[in-house]
Image (tube, rainbow over all chains, first blue to last red; front, side, top):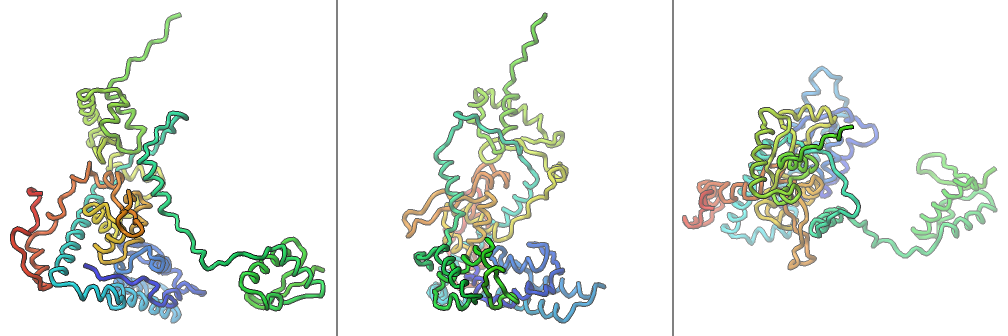
Length: 257
Length: 207
């Protein structure tokens, strides 16, 4: 049996993400593994998004691939590139070790402590059977690859469509099971409109240029967001100009010349 | 002016061939008989004829018996030509985790996501999502006795077709996959009591 997993988010992702940070020193490093083939940065992204399981990634092979590319006549790695790789690889090692170790999950640990040797043996033998079943499935999938059924689909004539309720229910389940409602609990009732804050901005501009920070100083988060939308809307209509000297710097609103 | 010649009526084999050609999924014997208007014996004779016509040794199209029905599919020896024509590569092989999840659903299913994770000892939700998207796994009901009535997952007809199986009975029984010696070694390593011979897994013949 495998111990319980720790999600990638349990590890500080900053080190892993550093490989994809501005500069992108590892952008041209590609890997060829059994479970993945392509850019190293994408591999990191897939792991972070839970689309690849970390315990399937052979880290030793990954490191050897990086070292081999170093000595194969290509341009020598820069210190920045090596640092980025070491940093991200170390995070992967930490993530994999935590995934394989149950020590960070208090409740399952308590549960496992309560297992008797007989119960543990039962779980292990159950997993062993599932594992063997998986191996036999792998062989069957390989033996049956390459059969392509017809791609043609004939549209049923209107009025002649037979719908079996169980197939319809299964199709609805499949379609609806993918929908994940975004959480909106953190949103309060919206009590202000873009028009109201656009009027406020126009009134403020009548007295001259105004800083966006000053404008929203006494507003809550929702009002600030709607005020920004109102400012963008007015700028789009040509009723004001947005001035910002540097990215994320102070934003000034002024009436058009 | 002479009348145009009347076309000869289609033979049973021709009618079945036509139905199979337009179906992307395996067609059951009952559906074939109904669509082609055939008796049991006519269907049997026609399938024998088509089996010879679509012999893998001579034809680029083969007749498969999978997922509880019949299916016309391209011969795997022609797969590379098909893939070049479609300008697509063969789907990436499934991961070890995906095979384990399918093994859980095949042998223990229908079961919930939590039960799959418990059987594997690791969270499997992401793998389940990928398999549902590939059509190999589907939600087939819900466990109404559990809190929240979680969905029950099971393998699909696409899974049976992809593994060349007619039904679940085509797979070796779960208990036959691990030998008694190996199970005894596992028990010995964790210090569990030895099981009696009556508790040893059944052989395939016994199952």
